[in-house]
Length: 203
Ligand code: MN
Image (cartoon, rainbow, N blue to C red; front, side, top):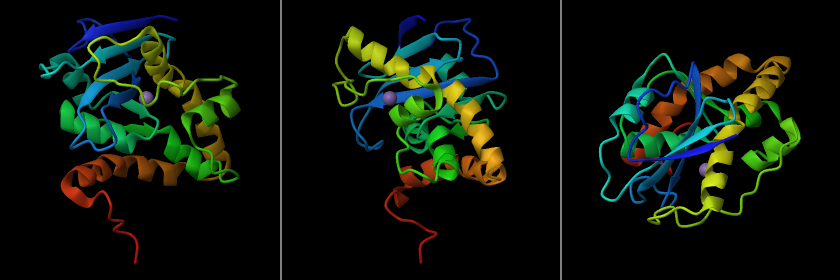
C-alpha cells in the first residue's frame, strides 16, 4: 500500500479503471461556505492518491476530466456530501455513482451504525481510525497521520461495495439502491441550490 500526495491536480497517466473510490476533506460541513481541501482517490488496488487543493485553488483539469467521465463509476461513502463539494469545488460529476452508506442503510436494517468505521469493521474485518476526522485540512502541510487517515477513507470502498452488493441482492433491494444512487447527483445539486434542509418527500 502506498499513499501519493499531489498538488492541485492528478499527475498525467494514472488510470483508476472502471470504478474509482473518492472521498473529500473540507474546512467543514457546508459545501457553500467551507472550501474543498483534499480529494482522495483509489482504484481499489491498495494505493491512494491525494490531491491537495491550494489556496487560492488552481485549475485541476485531469481531476475534472475524471469526474466528468461518464464511463467511470464513482464510489463514495456518503456521496451526497462529496458530490456537493466536488461539484462546487472542481466541476460537474458524471457517470454512475455508488454510495456505501446508502447501500448499508438499505440492507443492514438491523443496525443504525452506518459509519465507514462500522462497515469496515463488520463487513471486511478492517479497523480504521477516525482520529484525524476533524483536523485542519486547510493546513499548508498535511501530517503523515492526516495523509494516512485520508487514504483510509478510500482504500476499502471497493471491497465494501462487493459485500454490500451481495446483501442488497439477498434482501431484494438492488433496484431500490440503484434508483437512490441515480438520484444522488440531483440531491447534491439541491443541497447547493438551498434545498439542503428541506425533505421534499415529507408531508
Ligand atoms: Mn474522509
